[in-house]
Structures are given as C-alpha cells and as structure tokens.
Amino acid sequence: MEQKSGNIQLQFVAAAICCIDWLCSGVDLMKLSRVLVLCLIVTLFLPFNSFVNAQSSNPTLQRCTPSSAATMSAAPETQAVMPMTSAPVLYVVTTVAPLTNLTFNIGGKRIKIHGLIPEGTDSHTFEPKPSAAALISQADLIFLNGLHLEEPTRKLAQANLKSGAEIVELGTQTLTDADLIYDFSFPKDKGDPNPHLWMNPLLAMNYARIIRDTLTKRDPAGAAFYAANFDTLSARLQLLDQAICDSIASIPAKSRKLLTYHDSFAYFALRYGIDVIGAIQPADFAEPSAQEVARLIDQIKAEGVPAIFGSEVFPSPVIAQIGKEAGVKYVATLADDDLPNQTNDRLHHSYLQLMVNDVTTMTQSLGGDPSALKIVPTDNLNGPDDTIESSTP
Ligand SMILES: [Zn+2]
Image (cartoon, rainbow, N blue to C red; front, side):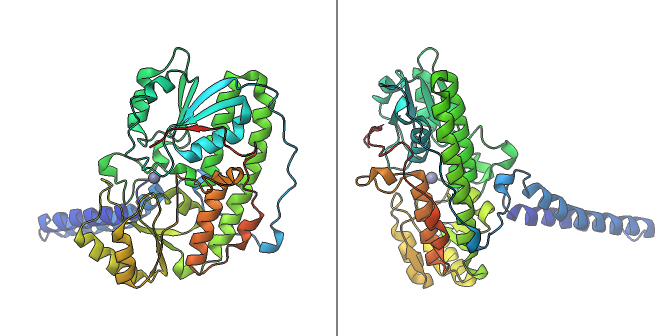
C-alpha cells in the first residue's frame, strides 16, 4: 500500500490527460462532448479506484472499535504448562529483540535462544560480526523479520546454514505484497517496504503463530507446551489490541497525529486510527536536510500536534531542534526494537511491556488517558528471560 499522496499524483495525471485531449480536440462538437465524458469518467473513477487500492481487506489492518472502558477486563489465564525437558532441544538464532521475545514466550526453556542484533543498535544498518557465522552454523532455526530489515544477517545465515536447518522470515510470511506499506522513510522507489509489522500486535500474533508452528514441526514432543504458550500469549495480544484501541481513542481527535523520528508506526497507525503525519529520518538513515527540517517545522505548526517523538536508539539533535522551533513537546522515549527493563526486572523485559510503554507515552503526550492499558499482563510467560544469549555491539 502506498500512502495517500499517490491519489493526488493520479488525479494530477488524469487532469493532464484531459487537458491534452482538450487541446488536441479543436472545436469539433462531437470531439468536445467525447472529451467532456472522458474527463468526467477519469476524474470520478480514478480517485475512487486509488482509494480502493489503498485499503486492505486484511482485518489486522482495519480500524479497531473502541470499547466502553467499563466492559474491559482481563480474562483469567490458563495455568502455565511445564516445558518437560531438562535441557533445550533446539538452538534458535533470532535478530531484533521483539522477535527474540516472542520466540522466548512460545519456546521457553525447551529452546536455547541467541539474539543476534544487540538492543540499542540500529537494526536497519546492523552488520553482524564475522564471528556470528560460527554461531549461525550451529542453529537449527533462524527467525528473521525479512522484508529487507536484516539483509547482511540474512545473507550470512544463508551462507552458513547447517544441513537441515531453516531460515524463517516472520514478516515476509505475515502480509501479502499488496498489504506492505511504503511511506516516508521507506519510499516505494527505493524498494524497501516498511518492515515494522510487529508494532501492530495482531501482526505480532501472526509472528507468534509461525514460531509455534515451526517449533512444533521441529520438536513434536513439545507441541502441547508451544500451543499452551501461544494460547496465553495470543489472549494477551488480543487484550493489548483492545487496550491500545481504547487508549488512542481517548486522545482528542485533532491531536491523534504522530510525528516520529524513526518511521516504525505505519502498521500500528492503520489499526488504531492515529495519523502518521511524517517521519524525520530520511530513507538513507542519515539526518534530514535543512530544507526538510524547515518544512517539518511548518508542518508541525500547521497541524497543531502537541508533541513529537524520538527514540533512544536514534538520538538526534535535529528532532530536539525541530520541537523547540515548532514550540511543541519533544518526547524521546518511543521504541520499536529495544525492549524496556534490559538490566533489571527481566520478567518484564518483554514485547508486551514495550507496547504498553509506547502507547502510554503517546497517549499521555497527546492529551489522552492511557489507563485502559493497565489490565494487560506484561510479564514473560516463561519467567525472566536471562537465559537468552545475546551478541554484543
Ligand atoms: Zn526500525
């Protein structure tokens, strides 16, 4: 899917065709009426057609429906199932921390996990060390996001895969090409879709489903364990989905606008009805030009957003400057691939906590009430995740 600017381009082309046809038609009345009918069809049909193309039939990308706060409650969870093994039976290599965490929640202590992309580093430009080849060559499974996020890691994995091992691209398997979004930092002409599917919890649920099915195929004895973990996690993700919906809906409609440094909320925004008005980081992950900064400042003033957002992974003096000059609050703590609680409280070093923190920050900064998020359990299903190995930057 391309953003709405595509519609304007199409309308412009349609108008240009009409004008050329008009100029070439002379004064012949038959030609004149033909041109008028053609112009009418083109201008009526094209905007409608391009609008239809911009919509998806995938329910995970459709607008959610806010509930009344009084009806929201957390269902009792099923009892945890024991992993029933004294040692891990599979060695799994993952990339970014949210994928690592979903894998840990499904696989628990039946699997040994190595997270290859260190938290706090830019996953889009990450190059694995040559020593990662030895690690990959021992793995039974490699879970990647795909969609061009971790190309150097994917290439290294392909070159060093042991016999019978498998690379599974969770993002690539989650959406069809037609539903991939190309936008601010991920323009269509550059060819890399926005890869941040996991920032939409319903798409993250599909990642978890693929992880469950893949682990079950490799380790059938663990089927009941993986299935029970998936059931609990997916119930939490449903709860999170509704809580985010309610939290975002509490933001005054005129402030339901997101301007972030890093462009990671495209699939989130479609689901929760918040408008991504821009991303500061250019497609080459460098800093924006002076002209672009000036344009963004004008846009922020015109749109009247109360706050703009950055992240710790991408510290940028530019975004602080933009916030100051536009006279809006600058909040630096949104995250998309480094999880909260990295050193203490590894029980809550989780994807669920990442999403609750992000939406709480967003909602509070834009004038809403994030209390709906309080009912979402955010602890890891299989206890603190300190058994996970991770690479150092
Ligand atoms: Zn990212």
